[in-house]
Length: 257
Image 1 (cartoon, helix red, strand yellow):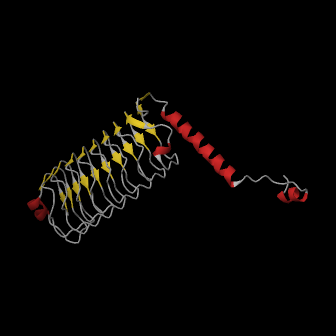
Image 2 (cartoon, rainbow, N blue to C red):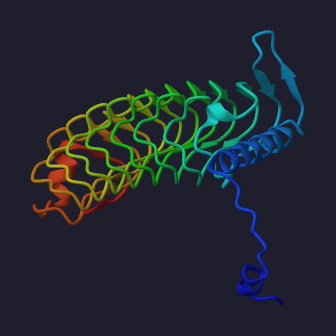
Image 3 (spheres, one colour):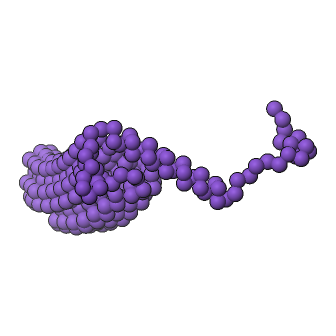
């Protein structure tokens, strides 16, 4: 191979593209790549609506596609009758997401600070963990499966879904309040490893287990009235007793203090 210095000695000029040309090529590459992503999405059955949006009858997988915005995709989503995965991108917003997803919706591992633009209805689970969420504003009103918002920067639960069919999981945040928690949780509720000093705002009725360990609780004020599974309250500043818990909460399972 020739050394670069040889070309200089022979007077050969190396081609250096201008900044404008580099920018143009980058845009062309991104456009082609987005078109390829769109083609992959439309490999499953779909229907283009009169408003220009696409109803997709199958899964949409945008996992690790290096996307910074769903709005930049060449197709606009209507409803998705399947699962929708957009995890591990660089999304700062969910604007451009479908408003209806019959299956699972996953957007974990992005840079979201809120959930504006998220689907209004999710028939399966919804996972927005490992983001930078400071608010749940924009979250779906209805989630048929689990709602997981763990490992974020939440200080309260305002904007959370009203209905969660299975488990609501919000551990490992900065919660100082459960205000805004769902009105209905079909199975368990987990808020351990936060900064809660009370349980004000917790759902009144929980079919499954309730976990509030590893907080700063000094009282049982605001506890659910009914817990159909086990009750976990270990590792708080106050050492609660099983008798104290059962006096306030109708726990059908075991109490772990």
